[in-house]
Amino acid sequence: MNAILDNLQAVRANIAQTARRAGRSPEGIRLLAVSKTRPAAEVFEAAVMGGQRDFGENYVQEGVGKIAALQGLLPPGYPPLAWHFIGPLQGNKTRLVAECFDWAHSVDRPRVAERLSRQRPAALPPLEVCVQVNISGEASKSGCAPAEAAALCRAVAALPGLRLRGLMAIPVPVDEFDAQRAQFARLRQLQETLCAEGLALDTLSMGMTHDLAAAIHEGSTLVRVGTAIFGERNTP
Image 1 (tube, rainbow, N blue to C red):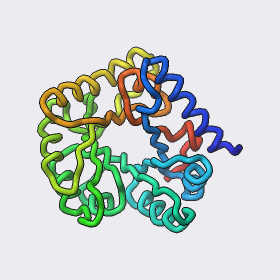
Image 2: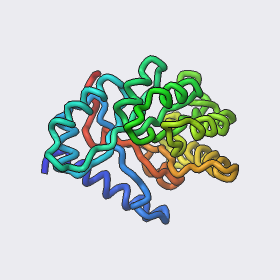
Image 3: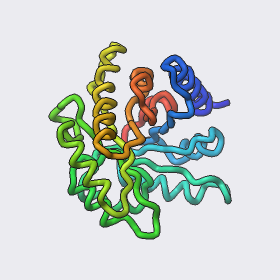
């Protein structure tokens, strides 16, 4: 097997082993292969040869180009891929996300949600949405404040063309396992609070290559892994 397929197998095995150590079923954790800066040929390889279905992109136009390229490359009758937009979402890029992607993980203010709703084509299924929460309070990081999450979630849930799925966070990078868990625990606890208030949230999008294990122990249902699958990033 080549490197990408070997890496995919290793990441899946790591997720399964970690889930069992955490007392969870591996089937409850979805692997999102972060393909930003990687060529369409590598995505094709991971999809067709590795059976990977979910891919994440941080840059709108790059992602749209790959989506178009892969539509013409996949064999006839091949199961469709699910494309997730996971980067900062600017208001002037919402139309492309609404028209081309299946998920948006980085909705952090009502105006962006309203634009996505208005621009989502009626012929497509609702756009799956996660509200991004800035759980570490970093001024340089996208995401709504935890105190604003309930109102934003309710706004998303009420908009046509969108389907509220859950919460997403990118915490401060730390190396210590317990410190990683403590950050993810804040997002899990927020989700539990919002669910108790009547919001239907089934997704916790948290955990990347370096902190995947801590995220799974704290209940992540979707982990975003790029480097461990594709290797070090290319410069965009």
